[in-house]
Image 1 (cartoon, rainbow, N blue to C red):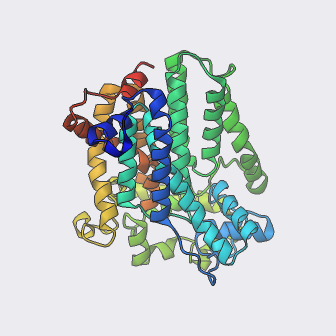
Image 2: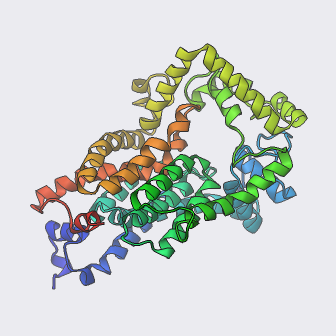
Image 3: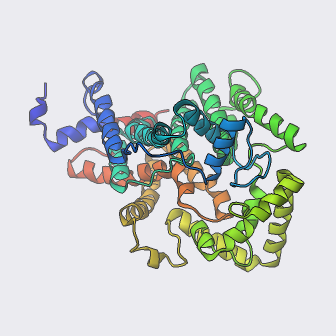
Length: 448
């Protein structure tokens, strides 16, 4: 038996790679995950302020406050604007639940922030297991968690990004298990369908990914999606989203799948004065001119004509501008594409390169480039896991190339970038320790 006090680097790496016997590794994995979870808690810990209040001002917190006080989804912009489907319902409802349980004073303000800390810390702690389930090896996941802690990405406590990242990572593991298993497992199928439906309620931009998953599942397994148990992948998400669709139809007299703000966001992001990023848009004053957030006149229009009709008019406004300014629109889309993968807010990436928050930005830039190599290595070892990750990286960001950029849009899939970016690092470590190519876990996952 190896004496822990005398472990060498190769022995530790071997354990992280899973080359030791499974019974001896069994307690090792959860201990490593727990240590990473605790490190993340300490890194992101928030201070309790006795005089703090649950703040307002963001669309999520405004709706949450209205939901808590009146029971209605309404008034997301700080002015009276009536019923809303501007945001997906799950996250504002979650914030309303927190403030309802803990109040709007110091305890509620702390709970708002600590809930986001827990979500991020669970993700950091689970990344080694996520990596192992995706066939990339436990060591790769540990490195990805360390990269996250080194970068310390900003905590988006008032938006759903951190929670979405955790749910997306778990859903990805479930689908990878589903697509790789020899026979359909009822538990995995039900859990996959539940997670898909659950993610649609806070993050409807996942829909293109889920549609691609269903097509892949049906073609690869020659499965009838309308027969049990595969039908759960359709029925469960529909059942979970249907009540909100019915509510929107009763309120707005038209079908709105989850969110109805596409027209507004396209119009605010694509006009004569709009730069590519939200921050630059706000600094220039263009945002306040075109967006009802902070613009009482636009809120009055919404209240007068109804939010659904208002968004239709803004959609036509955006389409007219795009057709009349195709070159400017393509330029904005190209800038947003670059900003999504190499986050920055000024017109010049080089100018942003030396601004505040360099540790986070530099780490994301580096791992973004490393993730391209990591995806290639993963595809050679385990093509299904590489495809599952590539679907997220290719389909999830599409809508964000069309609207003004903000850093938080990347965060739900940032874990995938860090995980793939850690793959080349794990290969280098394995080579330095003279291990054979690919871990035991990689070979086992590749057999499915």
